[in-house]
Length: 429
Image 1 (cartoon, rainbow, N blue to C red):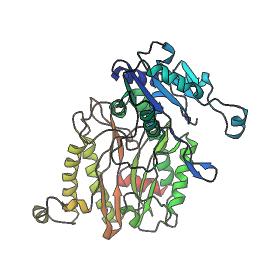
Image 2: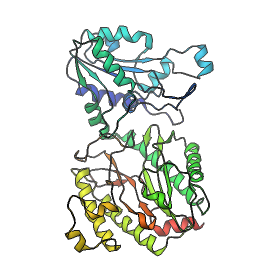
Image 3: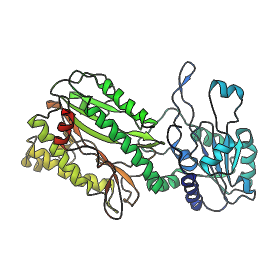
Image 4: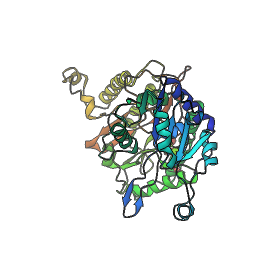
């Protein structure tokens, strides 16, 4: 793996926390991600299923974890099943984990080959009252392709219809929302790599460059610093493209006088950063651009203060929406009188600020956690107010990653330039 080794104690503790939540005589079964076909005989680059990585640290396909803490056979209370490699696999596909390597990474003592899984499953099932099966329950995600966990769950219910099954996802979501010290350390590394990518492009951007050239500079810096790659498809959006929230084509020329909105984050050890910055292509904001930028920046600075225990994303959004409404009035886009007479179901600010301010962050860029979940110390969320004036080709978003603590919010990206004057100064060098 590109990233430095992670202490196995992190995964040991994660499994311990999960098994403590399981009722007596339970069995939990988790699968790694599939290799997804690209075309011909090619697969897309492999990326581990987040829950599986959280519990094992194993970054390899065709792997299975079973947790049966009350099993009489101690060797099956915590067991990992892997591909058994051979000379042909080694020659054509490369190295696969040995049992010793898997033990060292995961802290799981009992490692078996995949052909031993069915026998182990039947033995643990014979002593289990409840079987916990995993699935992706992210509410805004709809896939036509069933993943390995879902396919296994369907087959399991067909093969073992008399066993009681339960959802594992809610238990894992509750655990994953709050990050351990080791996880926060990994996220700080992802943020630092992201900072290096941003500062590199401040020295690179100028009129005539293409958006994909800028992305290439980021890719280069990420690779040099051991990132897996991007935590999500990067947005490199100049001019009118900056007003498209999920613009990912990144194929247009950056023109003199335009703003460039960039939303990208390094993924390090499968943990993602998520940053947005907006810069002037020619290195100098116009008066109007700077007024709009500073309006968003003022909201950003005030919004960061709201990441305290007990707050929620929904409450945060309400508070930030009021701030943005005030700033938009100050920019002359609508008046206080118009706000008084607006349709409450269609507030005027939504034309210029149409997305939320925060989402949870971690192993997934849109990590587990609901909008009414009270913030707790150890949670990490984004802070990302924005302003999009399509008729003026102005799209601005400023985004950092915020750690909730007992002693106040901690901005994991506080060392990444954000002031308009600092951005102009660094671009002039």
